[in-house]
Image (cartoon, rainbow, N blue to C red; front, side):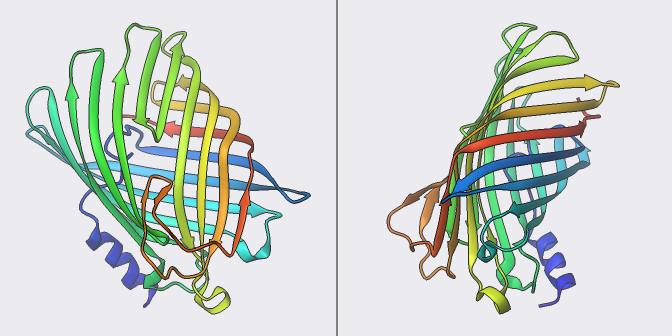
Length: 296
């Protein structure tokens, strides 16, 4: 299958967005991170670059259509050659946010894209997901949401239940994000500077070359706790710095899946295929990011 056919297919499959698109306010964000790890006696690492762009295409009667595009690059340092030189994820998302009344909204979302080493692209490199979220604004200080996402990963079917929280009891403290995927607690010194803690979870998979690797895939699981600094400047620009530790970090290499198990976030339900190779390690993580938020 040619690459332009796959790109068209990605757009056709998308009618909403994956979990973060419905709540993020950034029009453009760029995040670069470095994770350190050890296997045997080797010091290795993984460099990550993520670029997100989103735009509201329609706003009518309180309802909104939002379209987004994401690109993620994982570049291994001193990992075994079997894991590939670089892993890419390029996806399209769309979200329909329906306003039910002054306080409540319902969001449906989906995502489709190519996740592979991009060596010889085929339909097997395609991943997709969808979900729903119900949100209530209880007051000027508190809003909550409850949702469930589904993702068809190369290792099987992944369910991601989540709770959205936006809580600011006073002008200095805020608790926000998606629990348990990406919550954060911040102390705001003023409108420009804030510091705090963030927990970030990622469970994803990338297909390797059919010709060179016989459709093997890499499953990446990461849970990190980071100290976070936010600096807002020129009204709409945000600089973020994060430093902390990977509480859990694993890179598993699998043969093409012979069964289709279910997973809740990163926890498998029942038996699954054994990995051909596995690297598990804690280690330091550093992140830096820029974002442009004209929709605040």
